[in-house]
Image (cartoon, rainbow, N blue to C red):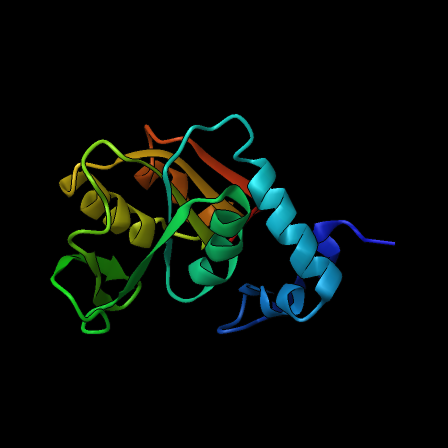
Length: 175
């Protein structure tokens, strides 16, 4: 019998520092029932949503985004760290907890007017997804939905994504 999705998530106390509970997605991926359930539950969040393309950041956005794109017969656009994509790219810098990073997507991956769904495993501060939204919109795409498997509510990522339709399968209070 399949357990509730929360029971597939391994929680590691005091990692990476004291007071933090690390929510480990690999324990979902390593269990066939957990992986199947996670993808199904994320995909259910798209019921009734009209969209053309799925976008996901490396690497776990790929893991969950590709099967959803495949099941819905939609294309998938990868967002990668700077320097990993071979064709002309658009890039966006964003802040991390310590420092900053740059992500990229191909300039021709989103066509003006396309309706886009963003899929990722975890909403923390929302910085990565905010950067992805900026690139999609710069290319003329319209973000119609953002779906995460897990949300760390204490990091208030939703504030950065205000005005967008954001849903999560599992919400954890705290960080």
